[in-house]
Length: 235
Image (cartoon, rainbow, N blue to C red; front, side):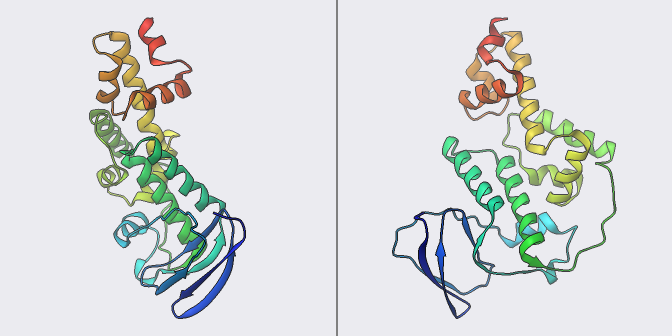
């Protein structure tokens, strides 16, 4: 995006002009009449959250019938900007990117938007320290049994019978990892076990444990174990 160029927009009938710079975000709630004039051929990232996803994300913390998200034209929010860049980079590196990564980022974004740009009646929260042990074990068993699949945050939260944000928060309290981080850790551990057995090629192991390609496997191996899969295979 060019630095400091002027964009004209009409939001719910009101004409507005603003100078936009890299890092600015426009927040347009559903049902908003929006038109924008942009003659600068700017580039941006569009992130959309449908209402069904918001229901699954925030239903335990807010009365959604009272939720009101306020339009922002523009706002400088480093967190929104970084979420957009992270999703863009992930999709560019892997077009068939992990549902868990995308849904986790979207859950974080929805929670952030609610706390900073919306009004709504919050529900009374029951303070807990992590998931009940039986639910945690149920989720962990499911992850181990489905590592080769494109596991989503929604199915893990459904398994625990919780909203996405509530499940993510309690899962991290219980394990010290976000759901996405935990699944990556499990995949690396399973890949290491298979490499040491020596029965399968690195390429076969890559897909058997749920990584999109060998580059992803190698990247996470080096980050978590400090070595490449080839080094482990050679032992």
